[in-house]
View 1 (cartoon, rainbow, N blue to C red):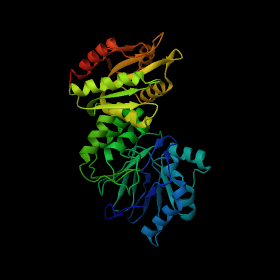
View 2 (view 1 turned 30 degrees about the vertical axis):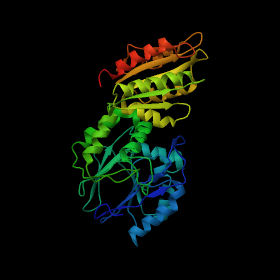
View 3 (view 1 turned 90 degrees about the horizontal axis):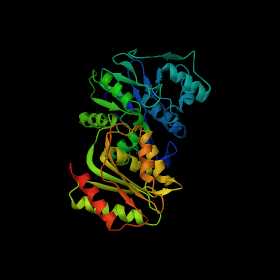
View 4 (view 1 turned 120 degrees about the vertical axis):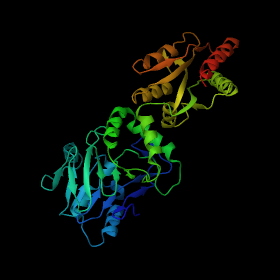
Length: 386
């Protein structure tokens, strides 16, 4: 695939994978992106997962024909992007690796080799001339590993963005970009909003017409749309108005209360109501919903003087990703000593800018008339600003 006159796509699609990073379901696979910048000197941008190394090497040979690459730029050392370094360096013994100092340390740790005699260490603002193309390197620590660099090509106004602006899904599958990019961002990069903002400030002075990420499609049109979404995600802003209800239920009584609340919210005109059973839903999807919408209802039972395990896990997923700037409500159930609300609120103590609803719902074993009144009051409060 030709991206510009001098830049070619040489990545691969992976439809063998079931869980990305051992936890995220990827029913439409993954793309491991790599690029060749063709000039007086040739630079290859990143490698691919080891399982597809042979295919990647064939892609390189097909693009370069009889030529040999001069440089391998390693922007990120996660193995889905770095695992074919050794094979590349064997196949092209005159090539030089260009990367950050931290990346070479990781290279030694991962693969037992740091190429001390075949490397160029780059940092903030360093450049590499290929001829017409001059690559400028921008450090991007913790987006989402500490060694990350991104690379700007002024000649073609291309930003090689490493894992930024990536998404789940192989490139030969048509799907909505925002849905899988949001789940990817929140799950993998979500904790590091401040670091993404720092990178944004650096990128603001660059004239960018094309974004080439390490996962997902090359972005060439309406870049403002993607930038705006990243701005919202990295500042933990509300992307869409609506209410997410995340619940667990042992014997179905908490579920009944949740379903009644959802019905009341819809009756009152709430723009969007999303209900998730934490024991059965894809946890990453529910986390995505919690960060997308402005209001969250947590509903669970008291369990072993604590809360039901799926709810505890869910809240842990939120807080470790810096969940903030949201309205939160609680529904608790307990037969003799309800304390779920206290536990859940305690887990959110360090979350910033959380507004708790005045209305809460306490169920003693099963919903009753008092539960109905409390659910009505909660629905009124959640819909008041909509």
